[in-house]
Image 1: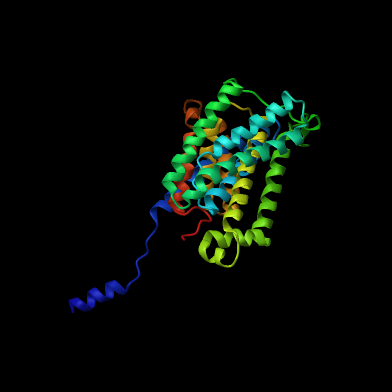
Image 2: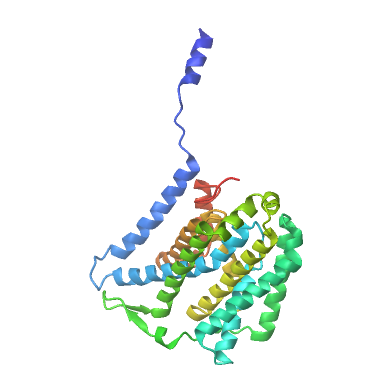
Length: 341
């Protein structure tokens, strides 16, 4: 009789509520409700908080675009090629300083300077890959140590050449004027909107190449099974080198946009490296859509926390970046769109 009762108990399904995801969702919902309450508590009139909310949201969206441009290169290198490149932030800052030198000292057009800076960052990344990382494929710890060393060397040299004073790149003239938004008599910097549009273009081109072309197919195949892809006559190392060049060039492009919309200064390389890593991990390793969503979440959390946290807690806004990381990983340990390999 006792054995029958025990068997009956075992056969009854138990409803288990996953605690960590439930708490994560509650935290996210509470934060969003707090932001919306402060934004709309005084109504929709121009004397309320809605105009400020619109500008803060645009700041978050454009910052997300900057994060995505930088993180898309890291998604390709770290998420797809499985190369632990902790010099990505140094390449980011290098691209910004190269463009700054060309625009301010050589009088080069901003667009040409951005292109040259992209190529320059890409070449430096490619040289680093060929000299050091190619021979350590799959050795994550060695790759991390090598790229940290390269990052420190580049950071010291950039500080020696460009100094420690924050500086900014002058945007193109026709993008320097604010753009009227048509609501609440608001205007917003045209260049920052252009940066958001550039992020959308980068994402679209990246997706088309990766999903719809033979190059993208070869990259995916080479990552999944290098030996078999090589046996089919594909020069996998050449494909990886090209992918590393593109990823490094995107880091340089992010530095150009950051230097124009924000500023360039020592230490910015590490802060943007951390942001790019958060975007890649939150979105899921190797997922372009995940990187886009991760950048959006990070940009909005960064701006909303800076604006809507109580004044005595405003210094904790940077901490919420890692709260976001912990919350997402509590719900999805592999990231929002990550897959267990």
